[in-house]
Image (cartoon, rainbow, N blue to C red):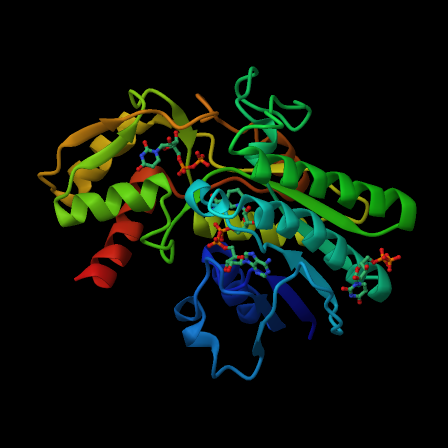
Length: 311
Ligand code: NAD
Ligand code: UDP
Ligand code: UDP
């Protein structure tokens, strides 16, 4: 039995990861400062003898004894990471240094939840791991994008300088049950608006694209990456190559919820990427991974989660 640290374990992805690790027969130490996560995401685990929750901010040192680390702590929604941008960069950079220091002391494997945002507003489409990205250093998304890019640099320098065993995962837009309904991300916003019969808020003309991966597929990819062959570090893209415009997403959600909501248009936020789609050949070859759940199936599961939550 391994004792595994999950930072950001009370968040959307982190809580699903805690479930998966416990199901696989591990002990989980979930560390979270509850900035965007919540105890309700892990409520069902609190009585489990293999689960432990610690309220802690990873920008401060952490001395615990564990066998593996998944570093997920960081707000992921633009609304939340831009609310306190300095704290976002601190979480990504100082948080990474602390978790890498912990991994170095214990000589254990550490996985980083990086992001497709390292590609910025990409000029190459779709995006392979070799693409170096087009990121603003000064815009309103930079606190997150540059924080995550610096964290990747730190992971690779700890790997080269200290021989640390690292795994870096570039996550593309992921959705599913336990997304925070007030999160501000597009899938949760549209579903909540459609279910409440409110206007659907389209930013820009809605022609920008994203590729949406269902949470279960994402967690499977994350687990396979942590348990991949020795020496495989990534970075590796994990996402669903199905690409949709925000208008297509809105239409599909309106249909699936049978909603009478109308579309309403707002200006596109600064530096909002126009397109995004992962190349997943590396994940396929190295991890024998590809997503199994298409957008319609995933949206149906997410909609029924929100239906229960809201009504
Ligand atoms: P989330 O906001 O639901 O979860 C993040 C968790 O980290 C929250 O529980 C939050 O309270 C916690 N946290 C934030 N700052 C912390 C700190 N300083 N110390 C301790 N805990 C802290 O977001 P998510 O969607 O679950 O994302 C998890 C990770 O995956 C993030 O690192 C994010 O950047 C990455 N990611 C997610 C997506 C996605 O589409 N969901 C895409 C790309 C990357
Ligand atoms: N650290 C931690 N837990 C540990 C070991 C280290 O939180 O078990 C933090 C500590 O704050 C340190 C940072 O990780 O500053 C980086 O550690 P490293 O050993 O790389 O560098 P140091 O700053 O100790 O020289
Ligand atoms: N978006 C939108 N309406 C919303 C929220 C988001 O049109 O209510 C757009 C947003 O401008 C972006 C896309 O949806 O182009 C995805 O946004 P999200 O915040 O979910 O993720 P990210 O931009 O980080 O991929």
